[in-house]
Amino acid sequence: MGLKLISPGKEKWNEFVDSNTHSTVFQKYEMADAYSSAGNRSGIRLAVSNEEEKLLACMLVKIESKKFLKSLTSIAIIENAPLYEDSEHGREAAEFIIKHYDKYIRRKALYSSAKVDNDSFLEGLYESEGYSRTATLNFEISLDKDPDAVFMAIHKSRRKNIKKAAKNLEIIESGRSSLPGFYKLIKETYDKVGVLIPDISFFNAVFDLMPENAKLFLAMHEGKCIAGRIILLHKKKMFDFYAGASSDHLNLFPNDALVWHVLEYGCKNGYEIFDFQGAGVPGEEYGVREFKKRFGGKLVNSSCFKKIHRPLMASLGAKLFSAYRKAFEQGSKPSSGESANEQTKKEI
Image (tube, rainbow, N blue to C red; front, side, top):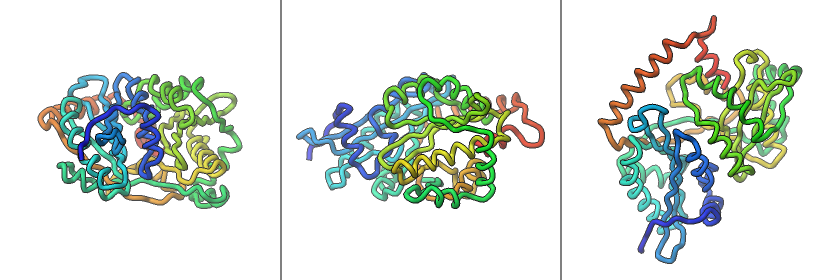
């Protein structure tokens, strides 16, 4: 069978994505354009068809880099892709696209990281192409039940925090106009743990290009926004995306309140799963995992596949970034009692 690379339009691409049982919001056509709107990110779309132009496989790749030494820090990230038709021809197309991708990406990124959820064919494909496998964790919360049942599955201490928060906070749904204020909050949050975030143009693009796939929820206290959370939506699933809170108001438990509001919203609007988007690696401490664990979700296993395309450059880039992180941490001032990093990790 003859296979070839094609560039399908948005409608054809999204029709294929939406009909695929393994698809996520991160494979939507518009997401590539949103990535490319940010200065330190870009999005790539690859697709394969047969000679009759029938789309058989596609994948969207995010390339991100630090704001300095781009050539030494660029990495490619793949979310549960390539998507492929569930047939022999579809699997052949998936293999075809990965082989092409490996040749193409060497000029673009130091290494690739591909997350695969419950797809034994993709797992075998990546391993056969020389990718190394690491086990990863995630929490998923079932929403296809009564909100009261979801609430009672939350750990007692979190339920207590949520009830306290309800006395002082109002949770509202907002939109693009609130992104500047929200961006300040996530920048404060992620700066404390030395994690770079995309430019605000990326978030603007998500809401401009994918308005039906994005929700912004804010925690308000005395008329002021003190925390926020962006959730992405795809079919019957909700994806945790970005969250931030003012360090001056963590005692009001805005993060607990926001997560509960999102879960309740999902229950009432026909969503079946809330995906917490990662809980670290088995056997390694991860403060965010403890926060997520207490919302009563199911701990699920997935796999991450990594391949270094330019070993010498990757080694040099890792050393330079390590030096940067050390300089950053030495310049940070932890709060009394508990380091700012640990506090932030627990509250994200």
